Length: 387
Image 1 (cartoon, rainbow, N blue to C red):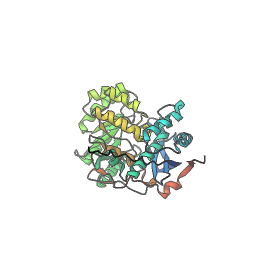
Image 2: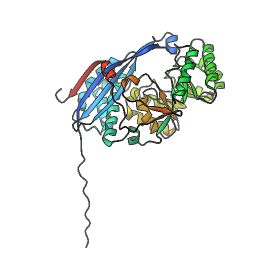
Image 3: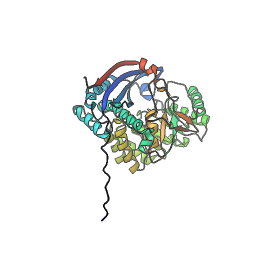
Image 4: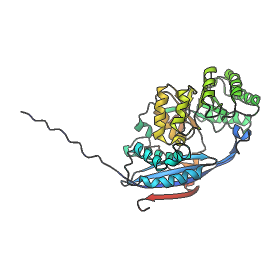
């Protein structure tokens, strides 16, 4: 009788988290930024962005970097919460990202599973995914399973309301020449006729073939959104973004049923559960989640599965350094938002040409912090087994 030996699996090779370094970094903006929230008196012009960076290092010498952010208030709260829960990572296997996310959520369970609490976890979660991809020697999109090596991209940073329409048109020309494919401008001013004048002027300037989007930043009520939305139909927009309050799922659903132009929203929501309400009610044609705002990549992947199941388009908000990877791994052709604000923070640049943003061949997210970012650090804490 012939006996067959059964191979015995070798023990898993484990690594352990040795340290976590958290940095609060304030990025100054060259010009105060105004959208409709400023013109309606709800906010002041934005002059800086607060970033929370997490650098996770293992005993084997691997390191992952991730970040979250807050525009205006909230940055110090994110940093403080991350500092409190980070010690719970020391000695853990960095591969067990889902379990670690849950562990950190329960570390701060009394402050909930959305908002600043989970935004603080996002920087750590992104760092763990960056670390995992680096250990595999792969760009993050390839680790997740990419559907494409480039993603359609559009620019927002040149379309704010503090600039004249002449300047916005000049910005659009420069943006398109740089290889970015679409242009988004801000609307939602108290005088909607002025919004329509700006959209018309830009559409005539860039031509009918260039993808054009508008963003009202939640400043319309339901009747205004319906009236202006119908007036905007003639411009062939890709979408109308945040026409209503971010939590008005019923109102967004009414617009989505009534208008030919797609309705996009989701960037201000801070959990998968909040986004699911938009999906469940048919309130959105194009979902716009923000990985740092909903708790990181682990939560983004859960939401992407729900969006895919409902055959929704995806256009992640801001943080293109993270979202280009997540969008490349989404089954349906997505969009990524191009912002040049973050350029000073990193040593690398994403490539754009032919209307698309390209993945790099660098492992992980493919980013490293610049010396300028280090110079803008306002608070820092290093957590290891000695603490």
